[in-house]
Amino acid sequence: MGKGGSRLGAGRPGWRGKTEHCRSLDVRRFASANMLRTGMWSWQWRDAVTGEEVASIGVIGQTYSVVLAYTAGGEAIRTRVPIVRTDCGFGGSRPWFACPSCSRRVALLFLRSRHFACRHCHRLSYGSQAADLCGRAWRRQRKIEARLGPDWRRPPHMHLKTYERLLKAILACERQRDAWLSGAVARLMGGLEALQKRFPNLIGVSD
Image 1 (cartoon, rainbow, N blue to C red):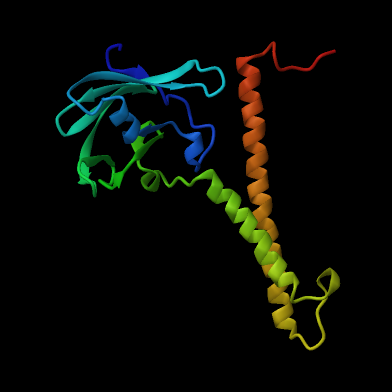
Image 2 (cartoon, one colour; image 1 turned 180 degrees about the vertical axis):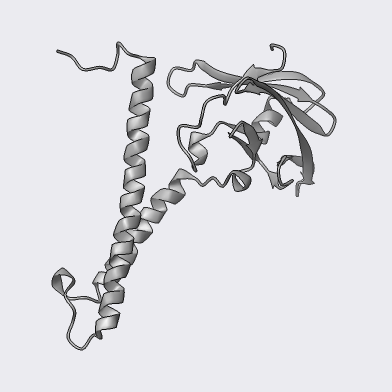
């Protein structure tokens, strides 16, 4: 491991708000790799397709904590992360990270804006949560449409204010879905651009 740890997270995050788009550290994997003991270690992130190393970080194991050593944006950063343990029901104990920002007991820490913290401090959500929001918007719209006539027409005897409120609710559902779809398309295009930069001869337009 080089002096000051390894370089990662120097660039601006390509995506915002999703755990899948941030590098993470899992205390369970640290424990499996026997890295929660005194010593100096290195942790690597690898490409899911090629298996190539894409980034690494230095880990200094101490008695009740680990120190993360890395370089981001030309700055050498060292972050101490306490390790806490809870008793298991059948003996032994389970390790947790104590978030460096809020001290919350968590299994995962995420790198964002050059620093590791829990997903709550970084205000991250899981991608599946976003997809579920889209599904809920569809279901909510169907329930509203069931109260209206064909082509969203106002049923007889429905008050105009009620009808207008339902129409606004439908439009809100559509805006929510559009925002999710726009984000999904942006992520897809960004991923294709990243692949094209990495493999310029593999992805391109042929004559």
